[in-house]
Image 1 (cartoon, rainbow, N blue to C red):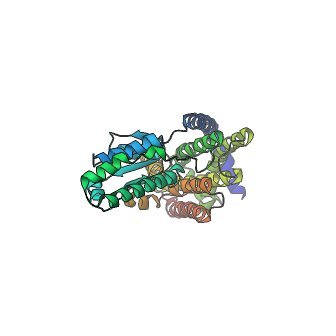
Image 2 (cartoon, rainbow, N blue to C red):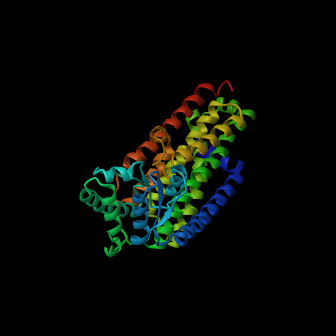
Image 3 (cartoon, rainbow, N blue to C red):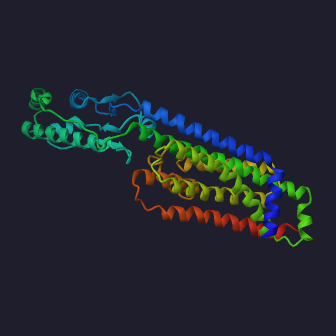
Length: 381
């Protein structure tokens, strides 16, 4: 224990700049939390926007769009392809994407039904209401189709005579949204995406310490001292944890003092951030022990952080991504970190213990790899 403490104190004296970088990172996170939260709360409007892709271009599809705008007072986003609308759906600027299939009109004229394709995010409340309204409309059109008996002119006449405006539709929100609370939660989850990048930046500082020790002969001095390889790894790791705790402490104190509603209990936020910090430190130490070049270390750590954040859903949900990409994301700790936050924001009683266990196992695996690798090669480096 004494050896670990000596190593930790020595690391703090050697890398005072790391402390200032941790404080700077915390300040940036606090600023992002506030700015992004304010943007989300002020940009959220009451009008519901839906994306529409009309492949049929018929009088029936036009009637559907008139129903959405005149009766429901929805804002239609058209003249865009599915990829463009998907980006807006992920950003939650639209509630759903409605695709009107080819032969939509012909099918109803002939007495058959044709379903619309509705794509939505599971966590967007308005989607359920949009689907109910659409199903109500299609049921009405199906009645007209049966009455027309397969005659196109009769169907068109019935459609023209059918006065949908006389049907009073009461619109309501699935939940009562507190704009400030909503903005706080969105600002928090967006700032967490940047936290994943900042904590890896700090871990690069830790990784660079190991090749410096190798170059300055610290490895050789360890051979003639009672310091064990695992003590060296733990001492280095504790210094990295101290830097992480400084950032996390300032950030979480800001949340507590400002009483920001993150959607998670503050102790859970602290636990989650510390647990992921342990992983990043262990990961960087393992990479530093295995590799010799600082350029290679920084490339791997920063590359893994960048790709992991994108695939792991740090900046946007991956619900609409191909299934292969979703499966790949589950092999990354960033996915389990962000999934934990989204689960708790959606349901405060969600079971997130498997997620925490998986992140802890990632950290333990990296720690063992680093310790074993260092134990095997430090005498020859």
